[in-house]
Length: 243
Image (tube, rainbow, N blue to C red; front, side, top):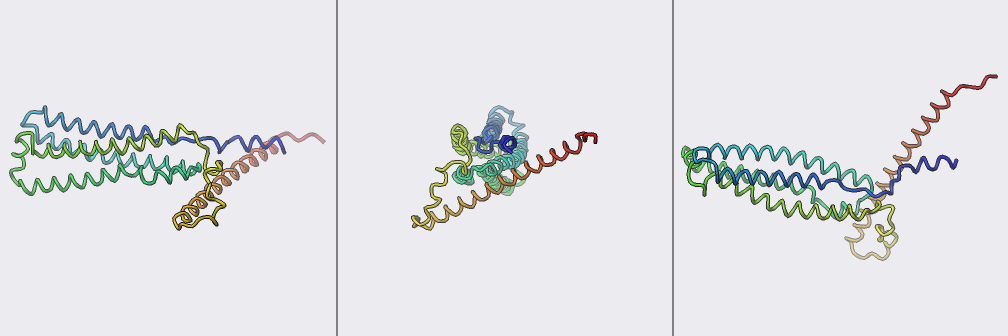
């Protein structure tokens, strides 16, 4: 019986896990910055007769950036879900919806750009193409580039704060909540809780703890099933002694 204990504990679920989303946020911020720099270069250096072409290039880049952001959002949510399954509910609760902010910003900015583009086409009408060839300031390309630069500046704050919090969490190398007594400081003190918000927070933590323990039990059951199948296979394949 004792020789089976190390097998069951081979997968140490209390080992610290890290959230590997820092590269995703860094790359997303880099792409946003590259698009903004591209817009500035096109507005400042391209010949006057190509400014309309530069405007449509920026629109295509915006469309591509939206697709990239959707993929980025999916990957980041997958990492957050995996960390939740590993039992880090307190940290994810503190993070809130921070990881979903970039997609919301891109959606809002694209809607704003679409409204501005529609307004420019409606206002200028047949003179829109001529307006593209006007001076750098107050052209459609100027407006679009200004929106992109503003978005990038917002991303520097959103992504920077997110990366700082994740790096701090990864450096702490904490064990899952269920393995740390301090993470459940409110457990067992229900009689001392007077605030409704504290009661709600306690119930949420208990729910998260139950979810983690249920997932942990499922993993152990799967491990036991694998061991049972391996033992059965070895028993069947082993030669029987001659009678």
